[in-house]
Amino acid sequence: MTSAKVKPEDFDWNDLGFAYHELPYRYRAYYKDGKWSAGALETSATIPVHEAATGLHYGQQIFEGLKAYRRPDGGVNLFRPDMNAARLNRSAKRLMMAEFPEEQFVEALKQVVQANADFIPPYGSGATLYLRPFMIGQGPVVGVHPASEYVFTIFATPVGAYYKGGLTPTAYVTNEYDRAAHGGTGQAKAGGNYAASMLPGHEAHKAGYSDVVYLDPRLHEFIEELGSANFFGITKDGQFKTPKSPSILPSVTKYSLLALAEEFGMQPEETAISINDLDEFAEAGAMGTAAVISPVGSITHNGDKHVFYSETEVGPQTQKLYDRLVSIQFGEQEGPEGWTVDVPLD
Image (tube, rainbow, N blue to C red; front, side):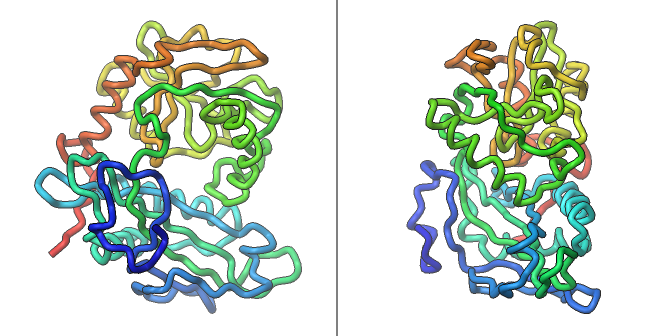
């Protein structure tokens, strides 16, 4: 389904993949002459782009990803949208793009959710309304320098699990590719980072793996990220660890789990994690807005396969973290102050 004529009754909310569906409304704002327009909802899914736009030629493209969650009472939550707004602007600074006002960012999200409210999956289906804010350099430029005009937009699409297995553990593999250069744009949510990951990801899938374990670009020893998600490991004595590196994208889910792991007394730590030290961990997982938490069943490195808790069952500590995180997102439990933002639908 990619037609703008899609209707809520066309969806099986309990059987959604992670795909694009063209909903009726999206938000757009335009940057020109040093300032952003007020922004408004639009109905066209097509953006006119100048042939000399920096977004096409020089990679001035950044994006975010977050979700709207239907609560048991019928209301709707956003989860920590302020962190996405701040990260978008950090990405903008790195790529010399115009920063977008953070309060306007959150209000724009609410407008998109409200306008597409009929497409928010019902509570209990496990599905959500995925929101994709992004910005591209738009003005005509031939030399390699920043654009003077930008387009900021947010579209929405209902989604199910990013990984088909959900909480079923999957297998990962290392390879010779780098996700990002040392001192490059790995910490920014830039389009080029994901373009570079497509070939290694494709090769991993062909070989029967869920995705790639990217190692640090200098030594190829320390774990950075898992495809499009951050990595965590839980040691045999129950400590939650996640890689620390200047070229890792700072995941909203990662920092949320670091806080929740503290609640559970798991002594969370961001630290270097060597691919040679996998025996230290009883459980491992991928974490991100799309992935939520996806257990890692095994990692194969240089032909040697390391199995964590199980290749078929989620570990108890991973399950505990997943249950706590998701219960906050869907409004089943109270979380730390400010983590959820209500979207009025009336």
